[in-house]
Image (cartoon, rainbow, N blue to C red; front, side, top):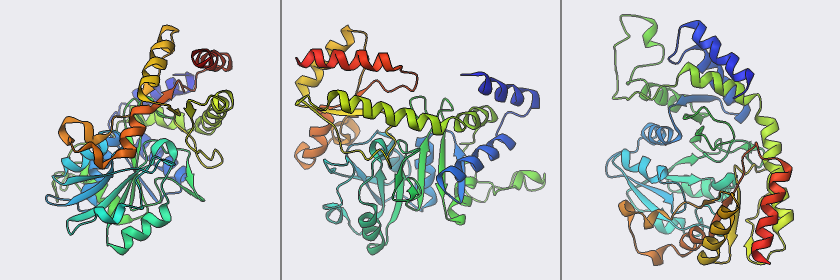
Length: 358
């Protein structure tokens, strides 16, 4: 945290108003402008955003939502939270996103939506995905937790579907500690999300005491705070420079390590994509474990890919149905990618990785 964030936080304390108000509206406006979205709704977390987004899209008990098998558990959990069933689908090896080639095989009479997860800022072929969704009358929601600063064509990711959801948890390119943002270009969906996050009250109801306790739908409390908004406003001012840092870091790692035959980089167009972390695919699971252990001995922390959802106890399914996801999950590794990393530190990390493979 720097002086600009401290100043913003002090202004909230001085105002005496801590729950979401003017600062939150300002943050939403800034975020909507950056992503090219008509509407933005700040919420307590990206997970809460997925839950609210699905609810706003009308997902309910008995419905099915198609979700990629390689993602953080929040994606399928948000479907379950709406009493619907997440239907897992394998991924493409070149984007690590849901495989549109097998997507229509997963669609049934109960399917009501598709959740696409933009893994490390990469998307599947959104043109094909939207065509399939439109053909089958399905809603489309983007888990854009990794996507801030990433584009598909000329459009910012998260803005390619009915609803997009971003995360501001600590590892992300900007953070408010916890928090998230729902974006949409549909006014009715925006209003629905705003009502759902505020106990089911209509927007502006609290301005009039006589309507302050009118709850026209069942909602929850997923409201933002002015403290989070203050940090978010300050962080958005740094976003452009952080995007440059993330891209430069990924490129540096790639240039240093691309000649190691046991390391594979996923295709990443840095003109369009801002990786939230630098990811690599190792030769096999055993090599990954040995590399993690070696780097840890040299005080270098790494992070394995999310486990395939179908391997988690609540979603345990036949492994043979998800060969690509299983394989990538077992071999994937995120390298240190903090925006605070110095060039000499990246140099030390790559030197140790080269040492391991030599």
